[in-house]
Image 1 (cartoon, one colour):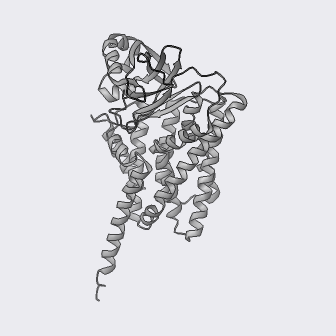
Image 2 (image 1 turned 30 degrees about the vertical axis):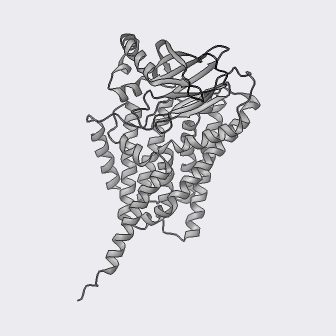
Length: 404
């Protein structure tokens, strides 16, 4: 317990010091695409805090003053980092029409409108959008694309998304398969959700029960987390509850810190642990809801996208737990390794809390992007720790017993 609290205190001190701006962020860039008969219009909402974070500016302090003052620089920034090409490589003409300060989902943003014109003679219904504003520096910043059935996700690892650039019928439904894929990728690109589940699994493993009992407990905890985030995801998508994004992202980080503390001394009763995990799932569900909320669906048309997105989340969640299961079980056998892992999770959580609640620079986010960027990376990191635990245990086992 003292180790986790000490690590959180150190993280708080670190985050107040100057640090490189490369990180996961609470705000995301949201792009809407409006295909026309002769051109495509794109509207992007870019959080100013993320621009400050990536390029060492101070636009978020007073957007009404700073955005007009830096309009030429912002125009050049976007123009240099946004492009469209046909599938055969022919380039589109892209112009920045306007920039203006705005406010969306709890963040000050700059609203950028662009016009893309296809090359002469093109007849393709598809185009590849390459977007590297913010995500060229900020490792796990997400760029969501979605309107009129168009959806996509751009990240640092995958800066290109394929768009349909012909007008679509307003009533065309969002496909189940596309939302399944979007849900799967959304979980994979969110290291905070995976880190929370890791702490839940570590808690279950540290109770030192029989393997069957441990698996049953983990299955129940995972089910309660799923129920919780499914309920809040549905409520947020339907527009019944829409808490500010900053509160949600900060709340997610707090759940990780609390789970890390509990992992050191898992003393809660089964009933209390299940109830708290479901409550924490509600908070994470609001974090999942941004993508579906942008589709502006209502009534029965929401059922298929919601089901596909949720199933994609569950598939990624189960895959992540499967990758972490063996190394995590080995780590849980060592009190020192478990304490170190919980302290590391608590440190990341503290940095995220201060970053998301107070928009402070996070000195550990480059580490988070490297270690927690995907479930595979996290599994490799845990596997290294597990191998070290086995090596230390082997050395101890070979030591001769002390003679009286």
